[in-house]
Image (cartoon, rainbow, N blue to C red; front, side):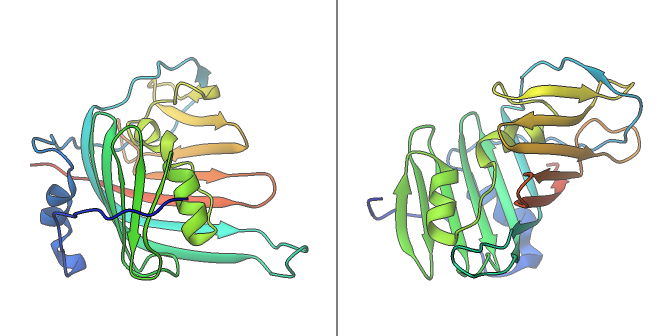
Length: 211
């Protein structure tokens, strides 16, 4: 993995400023905030892979990795507060209290992912999953998240399940099985839980920001 310098346009200092910070995280200006969340009902299948082009969210993410007998390590977990700004295929994520590597910024321009943290310095990779695993050892389905945050299955998902209101309640992507929690009759999820059979787990709470 090669290293290169990246100029970050935002330097937020406090979690209390998340709403303003998230706007600053956008790689390109004009991100439209979309509100949302929703609740479960009786499942059906088929959901179109169509995500929100732009969104602005904050919340908390928790990651768990299973025990590894080869390295004689037990199950491990970590969590971070985050702010995520998305415009089309580009996104910028800031993690605070980040999974053992300090304050971390992840940016993706549709072709290259860049991670900058206090511990690792600047790292780049072709995709954000490889980058996160290299920097932290954690696995997370970051590329699918823009679809799942939108309450939609990703193009590479299989077996999507919908509730009676047409909202996505579960979907499968490779080894990941994702489930979705909604608030009331809203349309966008407030929580995503993604698990793998061997014990990898990601739980993400979502606050959809509005202008």
